[in-house]
Length: 149
Image (cartoon, rainbow, N blue to C red; front, side, top):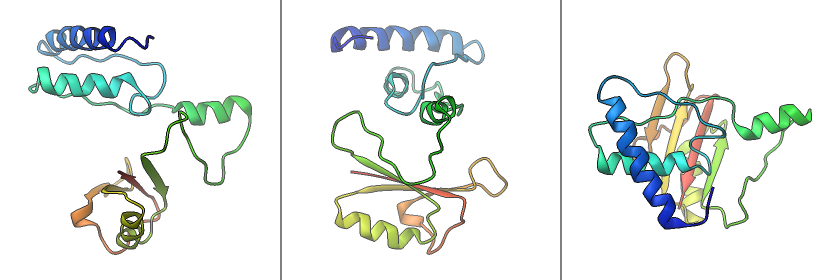
């Protein structure tokens, strides 16, 4: 862990090359501490992998998020909306149970949000991923929308 951006870049490039070498012989799998797609160096590593080794697929498989792990360890429910921040201005919003995705997108556009993804029934039969140009008028109760600027 460092704030030295040059050191981080060197590590990302070196690790991407090491992972790619192993992945070319099969599948490279590794475990992470924390959330791989949430305030994470792993997301940056995937970007470097895509640039340096576009033939290698880099993806995360979900586990237990730090937020839900914290609630479980503390013995507290999280049953209402909440904000997660590293102290900076939020650049994304995540909505659960989006029943009217097109209507939600229009409201968010007025707030300056430009990009949207809707996922229905994650890891269940009939799972669907929609990009904003193909959003349905209504969506499943088991849906999540991500909006970012």
